[in-house]
Image 1 (cartoon, protein in one colour):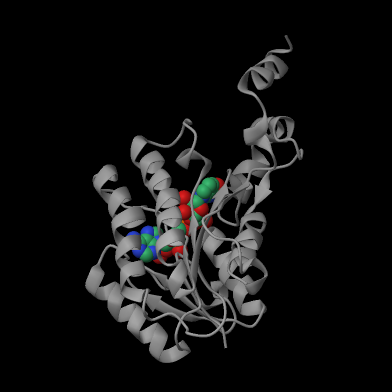
Image 2 (tube, protein in one colour):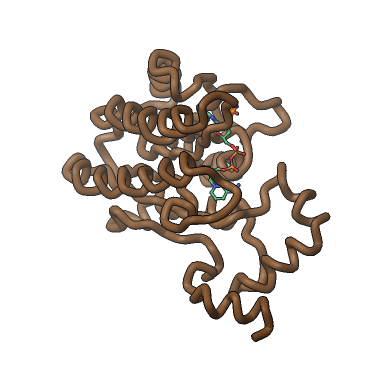
Length: 245
Ligand SMILES: NC(=O)c1ccc[n+]([C@@H]2O[C@H](COP(=O)([O-])OP(=O)(O)OC[C@H]3O[C@@H](n4cnc5c(N)ncnc54)[C@H](OP(=O)(O)O)[C@@H]3O)[C@@H](O)[C@H]2O)c1
């Protein structure tokens, strides 16, 4: 059975992804700091508690996941730093240092047969500069994208692909009511996004699931934007539209 490990699969996008992967028949191991309540779990998935920044706890969680579900085929990084301490140190640690440590620990433990891959969930702020997120988030996400490209080249011979998914702000269970009750903001997104709607966590989960499947067996080192085409619109065009000039 295909074993998929999802860091940050207990909430938001990661939870939707864990449900999708379990639904298609994967053995899913979710690693997060807290264990989600039963009602929020993906049916059939296994849950392991570890802060990815804690090397020892993470290794123990990965060992337990492999013992339970076998060698992994897919490794997905959906975690994001939510700590209250120094944002720079926390973001770099949780997004980059810890992800690198996990890849190095698992790189010779992947399944020997069949398709294998790693997916990093980044953000448009990994490529663009925007409001609402500080420098640490921008740099952490930019680093994730280049980490994927580095591993795509260097782990290819081991049969491990690496790719990035880059979502723009999406509706998730936890944030849905905020956006749906904020008609002005929702209307703005509908106006500026070429597809005329906000994204959902399912939109990004679908792309991660595709990249972590044999259907993407020759896709390596790529970054797929899930932004409804917004990043293609020239900023001046957007500004003129909003100002009606
Ligand atoms: N939300 C958006 O609109 C948006 C837009 C673009 C990109 N993204 C990216 O998409 C990904 C998912 O976003 P989201 O909004 O769905 O995130 P989220 O709801 O905050 O979920 C984050 C997940 O990561 C886990 N996590 C956090 N810190 C961790 C740590 N130190 N060790 C292990 N697990 C940890 C959380 O569980 P615990 O808290 O229990 O640890 C949770 O399962 C993130 O990488 C985010 O940057 C989000």
